[in-house]
Length: 301
Image 1 (spheres, rainbow, N blue to C red):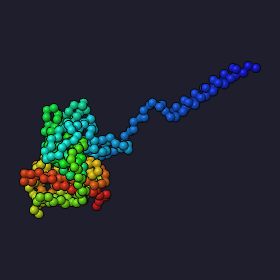
Image 2: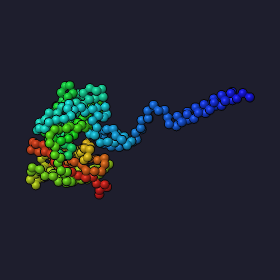
Image 3: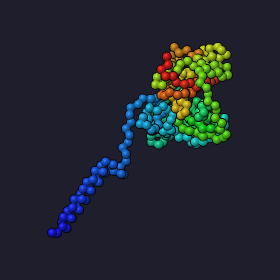
Image 4: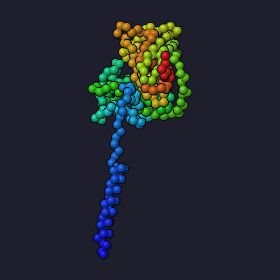
């Protein structure tokens, strides 16, 4: 009996079975060259400041401001990412829009088209300045810089867009000696002024913060408007210097807000931790800055 056809038929059946197994395995492991599907964002809540990409599946919109150099289609582009030390060091930058060109149109917020904040990463050297915008979209200002790693923030509202805060690092050359951590305190004294903080930051809650200003142990009741308010407060989270939006309560022309000694703000922090607070206020024609270090309180009564 000739067994060749039987052997050939068996070989074909074997190939078919092997092919079927291979197809099944391919369906289990997926095509090798096919990219993985993008992760789906989940709902979240957070400050309406700057947002940046991050791990863990939490949407970027849940991040506070200043953690990203680019978001919402806008990018903070420093002319130089390093600088020399000095009391009036020139700093220039642009805000690039979704089309890649420098933005030249901004809405006025608190009497300025852009607020520029600088602070060294050890929490010292805080400055709140207002650069000058050139026709080509370049912002220019001067900062007092000491050696170390600095973080700068651009807080702005592009015309036709939404309020955005972007952050970037600025390295300053020189012998860097980090400052010792500032102890937690609700009272600060500088020059002839004493400022006392009443209120507690609670994660996820809108906290009322009242700052009382006195001079030579006498309440200050003749504060002068500064950028449309009797004070401006910036909050930065220690560790990553997340920039938090803090809103003053009332305005000098509303008929009810007194010019001191108390200046009230409302702030919401996204997480437990330690925060640096910087209060700017104007008195006797000069802007002063009071600094605090505070911890959050969970469910404080």
